[in-house]
Image 1: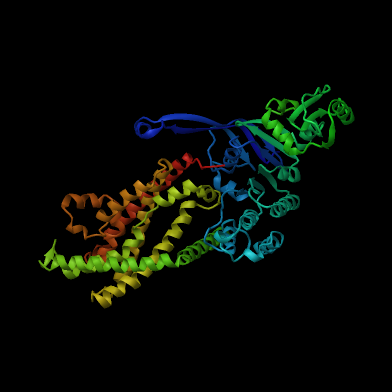
Image 2: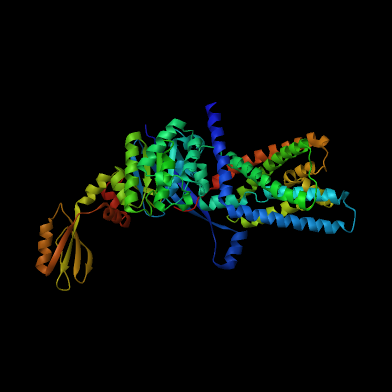
Length: 336
Length: 270
């Protein structure tokens, strides 16, 4: 029985389109021209208890729109959502008790108040039992290093402190489902690492279901075993992270540095030229068909090579390749 | 029982939070005090000048009018702002989404905060404007505790009516991205028809009728008339009934309007 069940979900925004200039503005006042924009189209997925799912896509792909519909603050145009058996829109308050949400670009805490005041209020709102609250607070203070900032108003916190504060406020009522919308945006590596560890640890100890949107593939690699990729509002991939890695992991690249300017080069089959500049050449090859030494040998017979490096593909280059070549999704077997 | 316990705890936090938020802005607090002193002096001088030529205006003598005006000044900052700006801010900044994600009634939470602010503001006004009236302008304020109690009840009802009205009005921000104009309209209508500028009995009959059908008078003119002695306590029964009727209608409308317009939300960004 899935915890999150999304069926045929769609959202269409209607915006007023204005022509330029004062004339256009006046015209829009009396006869507005509406334009419909499909943000999410016919989305289907199920998420089980305890899963951490990476929900990724380029800017404007529809990630945040989906998250907002799942949390209940945005009404879908079509389809249905069930989170722990609740309809997030119709049963907003009941649903809100079960979930926690972090919007990386927006604070849910009270700007002028010290963190501890915000946490106290959140604990009361979510009816956290006082002794349990005390326990959780001291635990979070330790793992998120909150002691130094408990009495600091949110407005005087650094970005990293703010995000730690947000996480504490989000997890203090022990939600069963957590949506994290770009939780590591703009943070330094140390804070990112601490936050990832916190999420991972919490997921393991509480069996919390986590849905994570991010542009930081480090988040995905360290946290998610499953990935859903969305493009232009539609799901294009849903499956294990490993499948993408294995499929694209068969590709490697070699970068050659030459002593003489490169005029032309003939590559053996199963090779593809990625970058070419005066003294450097980058080649991608399918290692199931040709070996690195064969490629290097072929190139070195034609060019005066000073140095070369062999690169294993990282997730970032794989995702970049996927974003740029939508047809490549078929190669990894998109699940519809 | 448990539910009630947590609810009361939540309210206690909300009340405390609002008081702390007011106090977080020291300069704002004191600049408001200064502004009220200046405005009170201006109002009193203006009415004294008017009465230098005659003994009564619309059946009110100078003492009655001054008492009313001073008391209206005390109530004024309680009703001045409304919620249009806040709604605009919540929607523009996306705070509305965090608010809607909490498992409590949003309107109820804001209402508790609103009442807190109202009564902090009232205390502040009573001290500043009240002592100015008593010691500088020698205007006597009522001493009967029963009058004060009736005033407070009527004020509580009036502010709740206006809160619901402002909630309805604020919901327009879901449809119009521009809130400044709405705020200005509300401010001007409030100034004339609430009885903050002058006792409503001084208005032409046609305007008095309009004032009767707008909710603004319920929060200023009605309670202030009780406190200034213009409305005898024997009328209290019918006044409270009327205020309760206003409140029920406004409350129901505000719930409907909010639930309807919240579907419009398109929170920016992301």
